[in-house]
Length: 347
Image (cartoon, rainbow, N blue to C red):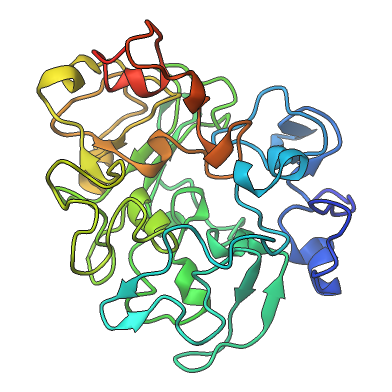
């Protein structure tokens, strides 16, 4: 572990408890850098992916970079260090989990990554940890055996047995290790270079869940990447338990759907070569487990639009942590990429 002082998002990080600034207690302590490089090679085969650079990163990794949150503000990514000055809860998070409201009465882990709470359960949740929101998504099991399914070229398929894709494993078990907080871990194929230089043949592979539309993770036997995001953003692009405010499985939707199959007809049928800047998810873990590495093929009617098709997980240079500048997507303007990767006839 590199002996480096932790860094904060902005100079007024006064809400952090002293404990989160201890190197052993925070993820950013090792996964940050004062230079532009996003992979630090320590030698002996040890490399550290950097998710927060204090200067603009040269080649951001798959999740983007927290640099833009620090430099531009909370519109540009997940702020895992300080409480938002404007929003009181995650966008699309004020909804109903069947019978229990999202502000579940325990300081609610679904509201903000900047104020994670965990403790014994079931029962009241204790120990507010302000400023280490990484554990809201990641179970930091860095010494878990995640190399049980090695593939050619340094790729590896990671599922529940290896701690979950990128350690996205049952984040809720830190709170209540009971349904609906403990669905199976997200599965995926990990690029050995964390998508520092992605191509159609070299990229991550993501699992979604085997449902025809909208994430319904809670109470389900499978969890896809869109389900995972829906833990906090549950009624923004989807609906977790009953009711379909975004249109269910039919058009028109209130907002762009996620966790839905890319249609096999019309303009969508033209997206057949994988674009790592507009990634799709494979329909389930069973399908993904048969892959021998990343595929350069997109199959409309089977592969899925997911939250990460349009958004970065950590941060981006564009508002709403988008993968591209939405203001430059002009219908009929002759552009390419971004939205036009799927909507192939609207440019």
